[in-house]
Structure formats: C-alpha cells, structure tokens
Length: 177
Image (tube, rainbow, N blue to C red):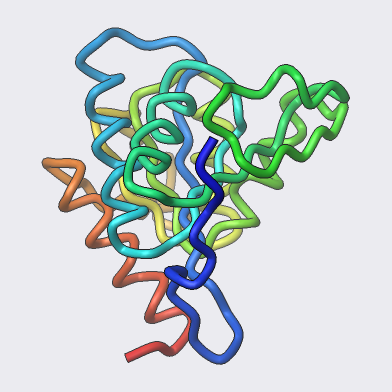
C-alpha cells in the first residue's frame, strides 16, 4: 500500500480542506463511477476525503482518491475498524451506528451528496442544520414546508463540477484565496 503524500495536501493557516462525501452503502455501477470520479477530483485538488468508510458510494469515492494519491478518512458506524473499506487510510471506529452521520458531516468544510438512501437523507439534513455547503449529484430532491426552511442544495451536473463547487465553498469558509 502506497503511503499518503501529506506534503501534497492543501494547507492555509494550518487548515486542510476536507470534503465529506455522503451516499449509499450500495449503488449501481453508474453511481459507483460518479463517486469514483468525485474521489479522484478531491485528491487532484489536494483535499482530504471524509466519508462513512463503508461500501458503495463511500468505497468508490475512497478508491478514486487513493488512485490519485489522496488521503481518505472513514468515520465508521461500528467499533470494529476492520469494517472499513480497503481504501480508507484513517479509520475512526465509533460504535455510534447512524449517529456517526453527524460526525461525517461536521468534519468536512463542504459536503457532496451522491445518490443514497435514508442514511444519506439524514446527512443532508445535518448539512442543512449546520449550514455546511451542500452539493448534490444525483441525490435527493427536497421541497420546503415553509418559508423558514428552504433547502440550500447546489446541484452539480458532473463529478468535476461538484468538487469544484465544494472546493470553492470550502475556500470561502476558510478564507483562502
């Protein structure tokens, strides 16, 4: 296994851009390829990929990042770090089940949602609650039930666009030019 190239990571004021990727633990081949390309582009942009560390979208994104020499972090639902997919560099076992979804969202400077089920929907909800920049790629469509709550999901049409938006939003949050 190739060691991560930490010198490649984008730093500003001692901060490292971290992008959370959320999505289902199983997916079809088309969504797997989309997530793989998102992971590749996160690594190409010298950011760290954070996810739930399991299969499906999470595995594909981690694989894409690893194929470009990137660093991946998996915040696992179980207490067993051996449950992480093979492309996770830093395994954080929590024993929290779906509750760990909050940590996955909070750890990133921006969130990219790809496809997904109800676990992903909960992460989308947390991203909106915590005002995290949220980019959607083939994922949930949300309608507001009042003028007080208007879902702010930036829709992307490609993996490259999703990552470019996420990086730009993360830079804004970190005040990086």
